Image (cartoon, rainbow, N blue to C red; front, side, top):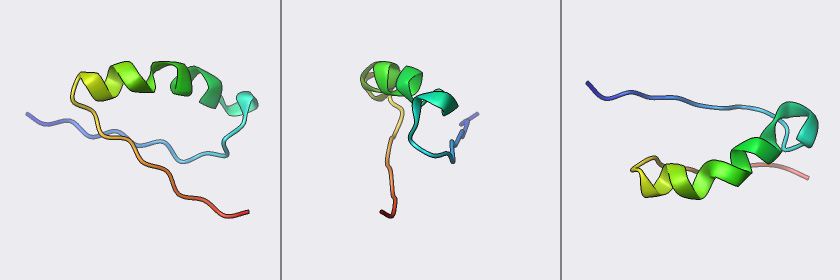
Length: 40
Protein backbone atom coordinates (compact mmCIF):
# COMPACT_ATOMS: atom_id res chain seq x y z
CA UNK A 1 0.00 0.00 0.00
CA UNK A 2 1.37 3.42 -0.96
CA UNK A 3 1.24 6.13 1.66
CA UNK A 4 0.94 9.83 1.11
CA UNK A 5 1.77 12.66 3.51
CA UNK A 6 1.82 16.40 3.06
CA UNK A 7 2.87 19.45 5.04
CA UNK A 8 1.41 22.86 4.39
CA UNK A 9 3.02 25.48 6.60
CA UNK A 10 5.03 28.65 6.76
CA UNK A 11 8.75 27.95 6.48
CA UNK A 12 9.66 29.04 10.02
CA UNK A 13 11.37 27.36 12.97
CA UNK A 14 8.18 27.89 14.99
CA UNK A 15 6.36 25.43 12.75
CA UNK A 16 9.03 22.71 12.93
CA UNK A 17 10.33 23.32 9.43
CA UNK A 18 13.88 23.35 10.80
CA UNK A 19 13.38 19.72 11.88
CA UNK A 20 11.93 18.72 8.52
CA UNK A 21 14.76 20.41 6.63
CA UNK A 22 17.31 18.47 8.71
CA UNK A 23 15.77 15.15 7.63
CA UNK A 24 14.59 15.83 4.07
CA UNK A 25 17.72 14.39 2.41
CA UNK A 26 17.28 11.10 4.25
CA UNK A 27 13.59 11.01 3.39
CA UNK A 28 14.33 11.56 -0.31
CA UNK A 29 17.04 8.87 -0.19
CA UNK A 30 14.38 6.52 1.20
CA UNK A 31 12.10 7.22 -1.77
CA UNK A 32 10.07 10.20 -0.58
CA UNK A 33 9.36 13.14 -2.85
CA UNK A 34 9.76 16.74 -1.70
CA UNK A 35 8.74 20.04 -3.19
CA UNK A 36 7.95 23.55 -2.12
CA UNK A 37 6.05 26.50 -3.42
CA UNK A 38 5.67 29.96 -2.01
CA UNK A 39 5.15 33.64 -2.35
CA UNK A 40 7.06 36.58 -0.99
